[in-house]
Every structure is written in structure tokens, then in C-alpha cells.
Image (tube, rainbow, N blue to C red; front, top):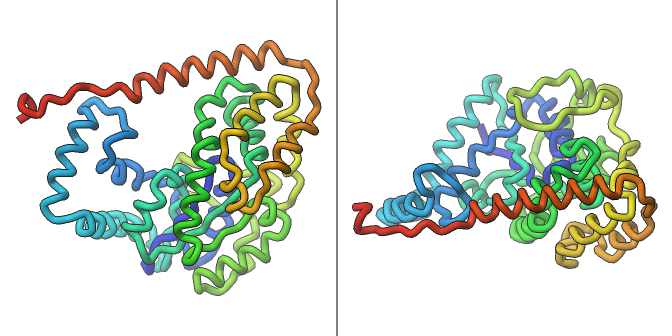
Length: 317
């Protein structure tokens, strides 16, 4: 294996589709969503994990252990370990393993340090489209599951932009909206970036292309024929309604304007798009109850997540 390829994106940004297309190349192996680097990177973070064994204590112990030889050596050994796992998927002599794990936006800097010679692809998508897709796909058309993904938009969007700023000189970026409008054009560019020959089969029979693993989103049946822009306006129906408009706008307002600019979007234009949505009253009470209930669940989980257990190092020795 030459190196891994990492797709950095937010959930519901089209990364499964892009992965499926790239997996059609004879030089690229992949698995659904490995997630392997998240627990490994968070092992040296004081915050971000709830665990039965007390992550706060684990952080102190691992930090002490790693200090005995240095973080660079630690990253090098993690590279060797994870690369050996990636290699196991390259059973047919593929030179790349593609890791598509949406929440890798949380550890872009760690991945850069661990895999400095990797290939990085940033996939951006209009956050209104992402919200609409989350409502349709993960929340069954309602707002009761929005709390689980709101941080992906309000915080993740900025983290993705910051990650791109960090890696823009050694990465490839594209917008989902552009990709579905001209897939062959962008896949050819990605192949050039990866230094491999474009293969036309990559865009054929996507539905029939199986990827190992249970994670990842389903691919629509029409992808067995072609990729097109037919779904780009679905978000309008999903985000319409007096209460939903206010929820969507409150989410968008939490994202810094510069994060939009880095990805090629305009915050002002997106706010205007929200204002133009239908402000009907249908489902208002249901949306209100679902969203508020979701917020209560989120706040309770955040309370559990951020509690600081007291650590008595003397008693732990």
C-alpha cells in the first residue's frame, strides 16, 4: 500500500457516494467506515470520552507513558499499526486504502501528524442541504433526532474549514453540488491528484458495488443509472415551516461567516435562502415538542459528558 486516502466531510455530505465511486478503481480498496483512528487519537485527549474506566485517569497514564519516548514516536507507531490494518484490505494489490469516516473532522490535525504523506480529500456541502438530509434520513422527516447531529453543523462546519486551511496545499477539495452536476470531471481531477489513471467503470453500476461493513449511508437506487442534481432542492421541503425555519436559522447563525467563505459559500446568501422558505404552520406543535424534547436529552447527555470526577492520584498508585 502506497498510502491511505482520507475523505474529510460532515455527515450527510455525499461522502458515501464519493467513496463508492472511488472504490470502483482497481487501485483503491476501502471499507464502509473504519472509525479506527477516533479512539486512538482521543486516547491522548483529556476531554471527549466517557468510559467505564475513567478517561481522565487514562489520559494522565497514557500521557506519562508517551512522554517516555515522545509524541512523534507514538504517532509513528500508530501509523505503522493502522497502516498494517489498512493493508489487509488491499488483498488485490491496491496501492491506496480509502478511509471515509465523517467524524474524522474532529481529528484532522492528528491525522496530518500521524500520516503526513497521506492523500486528503475535502468534500463540502451547503449546510442547508445537510440539515435537510439529516431531517429526512436520520429523523424520519421530523426534528426529534436533530439534537444528535446539531454539533456536526454548528461546530463541525468550522472544524472542517480549519482543517482545510491546514491542509489546502496538499489536499483536493470539491463541493458536493458541483460533484453531482459533473461527476466525471471531478473524478478525473481526483485521479490526477492521486496519480492514477481514470477508469470509466468508476461511475458505472454504483448500487451493485458492495463495500464491506455495516456503517455508512445507503445509496439511492437511481445511482445504479447515473449521478444527477435531482435531489439538490429536497432541503426546501424538509426545512420549510414557521418553526423549522427558526430552528434552521438558529443553527446557521452559530457558524462563523469565515467558515462559509473557506468552503466557497456565503453565509448571507444561505440566510436569505432560509428567509425565502415557506412559513406554513403545518406540524408546528409537533416540531416544537420534538425539538425541545431533543434539546433536553442533549443537555442531559452533555451534563453526563462534562462532569469532572475528582482524581486522587495518591489513591490510584
